[in-house]
Image (cartoon, rainbow, N blue to C red):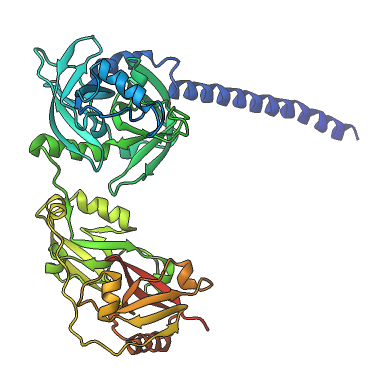
Length: 491
């Protein structure tokens, strides 16, 4: 038994040694992690703030506003005090006399020769624009160009010496959790710095070209147009909006991503206006039921609801096509397609892959210019040639339908040559009501074929059932706006 006891005693030191070794490794790892954290979050942002502050500016705008004839905004209309305040204003010479209104905002210098970026809403309608630099120097600015779609404006000042400026960074490289700094003129208090992190990316608020960085760095009124910096001192966003119930910062601010801003600024600098690509189609997202109804395996791409006179029509695109790929890039949804088209050069010929009738078709589209199309008067699409049918009403798919007659066209305010089925009633318990169909809607296509009679729709229903599909795709128009809706066929 003695040899066995000796063997066990020899193992004890090795166990203590291993335990001590692991504790040492853990301690070393803890030190390394602390060092990394300390490196990721500097003890002070002062050196960075001192470096970039000279490029940030305060912006004061001045606008002449027409005089008011009464005390609007002071007392309610019809109040017994209305005459009193009107007399008071008249005695003080403030009755109908024009007055000057001022507004405050922020901006930043992007070149030594004096180009300055800010928000369009900061300078919109301004008669005079005054730039105050970090040093206290003030210079008047002239407006180079604006883009209301992204709320960006480009200004220019003339200085006697080169101005300190900051570069743009690549906003696509920013990650959720990265540290950022917001600078500007909050609430008119002068130059101010706030810090936070990137809370989210690729936020959309209301515009087709939105690509906002969300941050919890404090952004308040007066910060509009100011820069959002990364830790390298590069501008990755332009502070534009906040989400707040009280008008003050609650930690939800939005900055337009620099990769959107730089394209806009380049065009404003070169042309004084934006020049975005244009396909000439109206589109909607492809939902799973729409995908199933047209035989697509996955719900992806952008479905064409209407082809206007222009580039796509010239290239042979049709209503109901699903755009799967644009210029070699797969299309996920309508938002991504709109942004990609807008970022493409006007006049460029691109390959567009569409899904049509169960197969793919490649089209070559020469892009037009969006701004010119928006200024042009819309042209009505060619209407199908067909004779009026005898009025008839039938209920199907939760809808009560009637072929368009001259009387119905007049009631609904549509062109006299439009063909289709008018929705006169919708069963509120039916899928059609849930998907937004209402009385007054007009169905112009079913199963991606035109319909002008009840018989046409019944034929389309029979065809999709025979094909083994579970839903029927309808093209519905309301006040002229088209959209596709897929309705289940039931058992």
